[in-house]
Image (cartoon, rainbow, N blue to C red; front, side, top):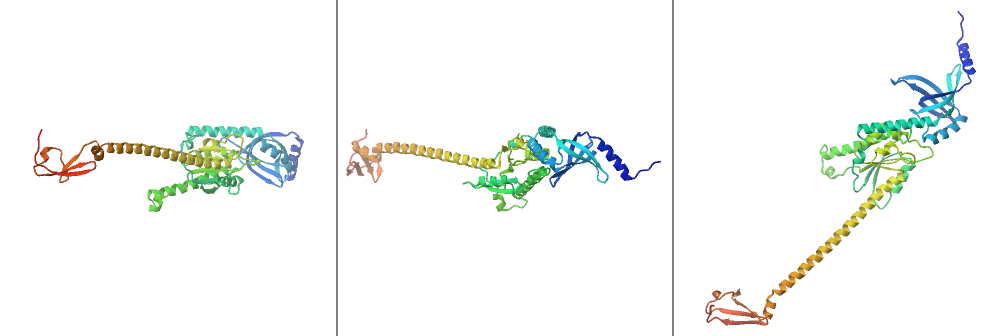
Length: 384
């Protein structure tokens, strides 16, 4: 039985692989990715239908190649390489006696990744439609006057700064930031966590209002938020695949407050934009949306005041006319006018005499005329 040392076997394997000059186009999923010193190190995997690993391979894209492939891939896909992404790469194989088998990436086909992202996107849309939640958030009512806004964004993001700066106007807005990661493989879960924090504050308020911690102050307190804003700034390298994530979109679609998005992109609308109450292109546009709403409400109030003023003026004119007519009627039936027409008024002890039956012989009769009165004594009555 012939025996070999381990190094001899490794050298033999290395020679066999070195003899193979062909390169290979390989479909795989990125399990992890790490950039260091300008190089890119990836763990590529293939999963069986059961979800278990069927294969795994360490791949490297060296700096001289990665410097060209990275901008090309990101420009075509709108995303950088990240865990969970499906890629099609051209590799050449190498074997090292100590480090084992490795693959050097020399090319990449972004169209394959774009196609897979599009497939995932359509699957997310179909699943949301099947769940019946696609239009749930759009069915909510935005308060007439929005004052309190919950903002989900990265605190240091330029988009968040633009939003706050644009929101500074003659109208008062209260904003509360719920920090979240806005790109990369952890972005979707981070945004969901922020939504849950907002919901917890709303639930606490609701419990206190309903009497769990009931007091007079809480009974008069309003809902802590009127709307939720999800914003991020744009940039040369964008990563929007997280906004097509099913779990994130499902949470937003079913959220109890209107969700307004300003993700800062110009390519196809994300699934998150599709389920949101209102989708706008940039954080600045979201801020202007709220300002426009307040301005429209102010205009409506001005118009209402104008109509109320016109109605009040019209009612005053009508009542003034009625008073003038009433005054004329009073004037027509006044004693002074009756006296001026030759009529007089007779009283006994201040009581108006309307019939001879009211008189008795000897009564002192006062006759009122237009220019004075006369007093007489009743001596004789003649009845018709």
